[in-house]
Length: 258
Length: 251
Image (tube, rainbow over all chains, first blue to last red; front, top):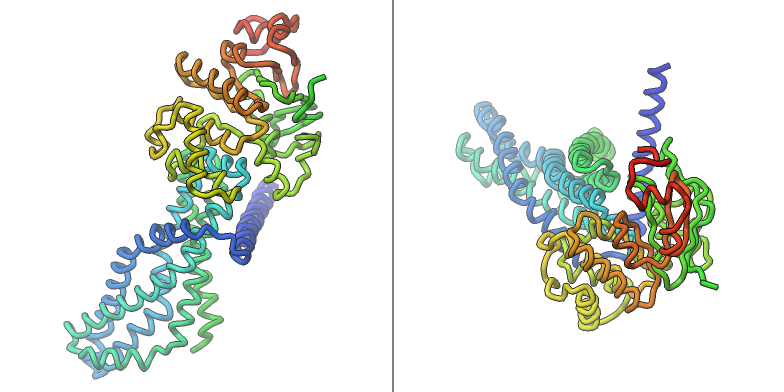
């Protein structure tokens, strides 16, 4: 009986959570469609959530591109396949690693920041104060963050793709003596405009996951400082899990077996 | 006969297994300061949140200007809330905004006034609470008493008909407590409005209240003018007013 109780509780909890996030997403979409947007705050959030994430995106993308190149370039060159390295790096960066790694590192930085900020506002009654002034917390706080993420994560992803390919190119030239022209020609042959667009489609979905999970975790914070910590951790863990799951689903739908 | 601005009518409310209010009734007389007293955790702040529509009762009704706000859609409720202001125990100013921006927030969101007009109104509100010099400061730069007064400034900036004060003097020294009490009385006179104050500070309550309601075990057990409450024969009221450990209130 106890096992059934626990199972029942977990099931209810899951549907409550899924329902809560769906309602938040629906409300936010409603404000976006009706253009009830705080533009200045959105620009401010673009800077805080997006521009300030640039350095970690540069670091992760650069080293990812470099390591793919390092693993593949030397061996490929030994077998006379150096001309394929650029394609391998670009293919992996644009279709998979670029969107996903950028989303994961941004989830760690931004998802936690959103959850912590909104969670602190809950425990210090600032959210209740907004409601008591007749202001909707979703429009006031969630929509600017969601919109900022939807704009900035795809831009960061493009930036990350370029940095990753540049890092790979540098390693290919330094260690396997593959010329930049050969590297870039291979990259252009392997990755088309369609792949870039599909990679960006993924990053839109990841942006929504990061912003909505962070906001929902923050707004449902209970229990003071400990609650804020719990919400913050939960936001990062859940965002990353959802990014991995949705990445598989999106790859399946967008790229199929190709 | 005194006219009622708001009324809590037969409200019961529980959080999980914990009963907060049971068949609770409170009248809020227009133009008066009504103070609600009671033990810590008795549900006094809950009454303020019911009056502001932030919490819905399990049963019963909350009327503001004769309209039941318990079953109003959120959009309509937001319209009602523009005539009501809640001043929070710890001010609840948005810590990312300056004091001036905090006070200006309701005006910016709900009116189409020009920036210069908003600044003038905000300065007037801050001046009313003696904080005109804090316009550009962040909430983190203010002391506890100043924060509460900045919260008052935000509460009055839309010239509400009803101001709800949640423990305005808790945790303050006697001088600041006197200043805050005096500010509440002055603001009521200035706005010609109605106020509900939750407080444990009896000296402060007797200075400002027109009516006092005592909440005990989820219900209002006494409601009267200050003089009559002081003379109440209810042993629970007397024990509370005397701060005695001996009496019917379980410690």
